[in-house]
Length: 142
Image (cartoon, rainbow, N blue to C red; front, side, top):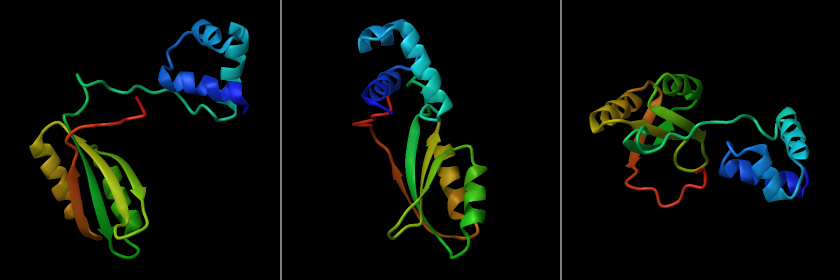
């Protein structure tokens, strides 16, 4: 991957719906060259896909991060439970005082409270701590 590929990826990350002609103009390349580079980046796995980021009109109103401590060898069962919960968007394993960090979304405080209760009641969960997101100050994914 060269500097041009990296610049192309940066432009696509900014707006993946930009026409190839616009990308070509911004990169100083021919449209066919940009299209060929995109196809190559897709085939090599540098571009894994394209996605939609819901805007405020349809995004869930509430977001929370949950720090989860689990019992030894309970990881697979706890992860299966978290995967089954539609409120859970991401789960990361961690080092430190907690074992997992989960990101949840919900449309109402009641729905969020229910999801948090379900996590806390899950067999193998020793404890959890929830952090409700109040506002977003920086989001490089947008």
